[in-house]
Image (cartoon, rainbow over the protein chains, first blue to last red):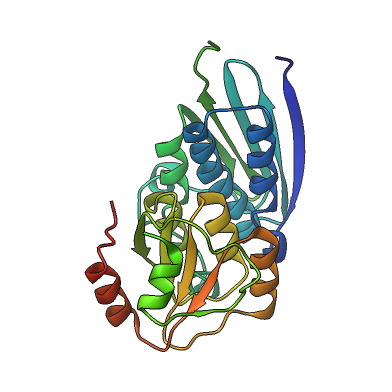
Length: 143
Length: 113
């Protein structure tokens, strides 16, 4: 099958549309006939990455590439950056402000959830500039 | 277990009766942290929470949950209800606190695995 590529633009603090990019991506994967267990993993990881942009950044974008072998997603944002990525990867660690926590975000499970559901994950960040999170899920060989 | 059976047994109010209620409840999960639900609930689960804002619908829809049960007389925000109708996610409410609701759901045989 031909590769499918696309991009979603994300706006910081736009809680009204939060999750819309992940939902659209889920629909695209369903349309391509990707196995449901993999779609579920992508949906979790994409939602977490999308929410990180909404919560912390000014703006960002989610690029996706779907091939016969894998699903690759890159989320780039213009945000505060992560000073200590190792710490941010630890479950329970969060720098979210109180009003975000009151909404049920900021439990410090975002990056750990992405890691648990992806086959590869890289996080690059420059404080004061932004963060790029890239992850992929392998697809089983076509029958 | 059928969602309708859960609704009847616990006398839950359906806030958006226009959605399709014919669905199987495979288990239940309680949390007010959205990433916790994303990480630990499973498809078909009923989600018990006190969060009423719009983003709970995205979580339920992405995870394929069977519905959201709001506790303690909480009512969904207007935009939440609108989104839930669009996304076909049942929003249920009850006057009971979480502890009581969960006890009853457990007695009905629902588990979280």
